[in-house]
Length: 232
Image (cartoon, rainbow, N blue to C red; front, top):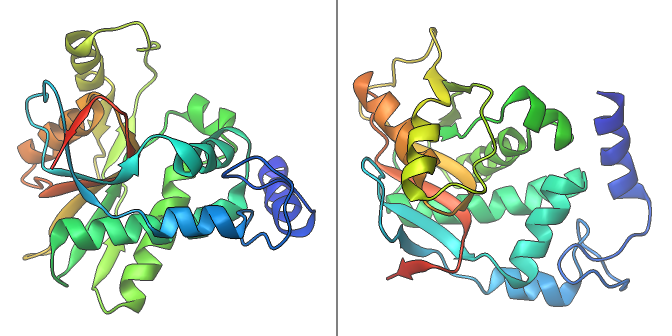
């Protein structure tokens, strides 16, 4: 807890390199230089789909490809404790949600949970922070919205070496619906949130679990999609 607090204070108070280009430059805003802010703001959300797409994957929208300033900013936030980046990244994620859903309506945002081990390694619940900032941005724009932690993550083996089928099987066994989850308010749209989509197996697994409980996600919103995607 203290380590996370110190990372927050250090990121806001100490001069540091830009999270997007890794250069020491003046005029940083939440840890990102003006050029990288411009590059991130120029990204436009679009629909993405893994090839092949796993069974149960809802329509998925991403801000952009996993590269350039977006990739570097995500890595700085997730892997290096740059908590000050949660706000701008959460605002960008809100843009993806708005594009994916289409029009203002009641929303239930469901962030993909970290395992306790991953949360410790990443200086806390990184996606939970993004979800809160995302919800605040949407609420300020007039969207009725809440964040629900409907799913918990179980310890699981590293899936880096697995193929798509192996990742899907691992993902199905890696999550459980919380006993106190739901119900979703009538008429609300359930939106899954994640930072990166690769094979889509995690999003598909959580979507299937929630569907069994009558809480099917309508869409998934992520910040980045890996390069081997079919984008429309």
